[in-house]
Image 1 (cartoon, rainbow over the protein chains, first blue to last red):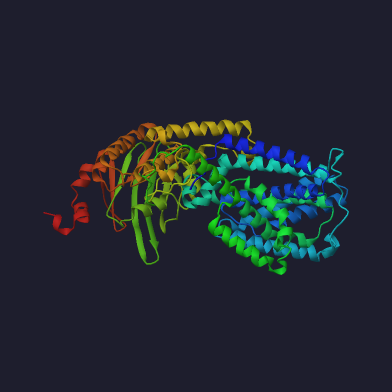
Image 2 (cartoon, rainbow over the protein chains, first blue to last red):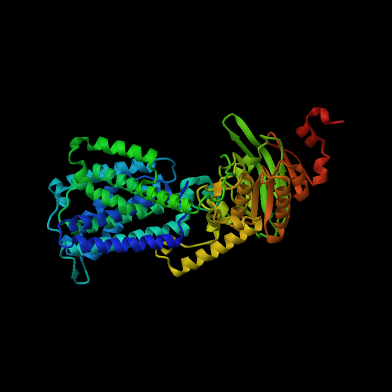
Length: 332
Length: 263
């Protein structure tokens, strides 16, 4: 496997490029209607970072992440409706999403295999049914409107431009956080669990607890993103948090690349372009998702970010002329 | 679980341990103790139950009967990560490294036992976590230097020849700073020079406060490092004693060389 070397320096360069891109994109699209779509991209980046960490670090899959996103959105909308300040509502919504993940995860994560994928699928379906059916709370399929803009300590994010900075500021923080986690003690423990649970346990790593923590963290990211989403679009309805959105989030994570938190940015940009791409597919889009899912898993397991890493690694090797031989590679 | 005074208890006590899998008895009523500061050998023909015993001691699976005590503490059936946390490290017969990570990263994962930083500290790069990370790297480099792999720290683990992968797994186990180290055929795949270097490493472990339980087919290595040897055959303990006692024991010779070898 190539391009796996990720010293701190590269991370700092990528973060600088990311920050510059946020500023430049704003300068270019300021006043344009697309700035709203870009704000949405920042919000999706937050949720997708959570999925990238879940799958890339610990090897687990969530097929119901839009439900955590929806829990965050609805909890925020309801609490703000009850006169909570948006920031407090956002923190509570994030906490609720996290707690739900812990409750789902505790009975499951001692088991091996894809039990989490199945359980999150079920959680997604149940959440979708509740959002639709619990009309006294959620107003059902017609959705909840008139959600006020986000505000922090008296400053209101009143327009799309302000939301752009809010979303990408938060997204930048989350990508930075993900990159930090990746290299940290717990991030390395998660990678060990993903690769070999028995070896990880022999190294004093609590496998079940580690899996639970990263699942809860990924749900926290999704809930946080959902909360900002509700304040950005001002109107939420169950259909935005169902099965198809869950697949789209996971697909975006896989396409963007699960080998690095920076892949989440690419995945989110794909996701905001998606409606234009799939509009002609109509009802066949689920089939198209399935095909893309399989192709990516088989041929591009590290997504766009992985392909970019490979290109850079190849360029570096080419520049170094014939590199030191690694002919002694063992058969495994 | 109850604590006994550790000064009097042996480092490891295996008491009447049996393990059967469906239709197969892998261990049958095996008992022995390993005193602190010893290099204790475990030999026997293929299929004698040596690796099964390692897996029972490290709680990969519980014994069907019997108890395991570590430093006076009953660890029978404890979760494997807790056994490791108490200070029992191991290597695997078939080397289980994290192949696409570097030699240094592989070793650093071994420091998990002695480090504390949680997810929040890691995410926010809190000063304590950063300092701890640096100490863990230094500790890992020291372990790599001990086995002679420090010059390969930035290489991918899977790019090393097999013998060096074994040494890397050894270094990773040392990074736990174990009280008891279980080595499962550490010399397999090593050449003569590497094996002699390994023997010196193993002999130096008790002085570092590490008690060793060693499974090894290379008898020259075993005889040169072991203080005491247990012999298993078909899951039964057939002999225990010093190296001299073992090499002259007729049951052991019969198990290894067959009936005809007895004069």
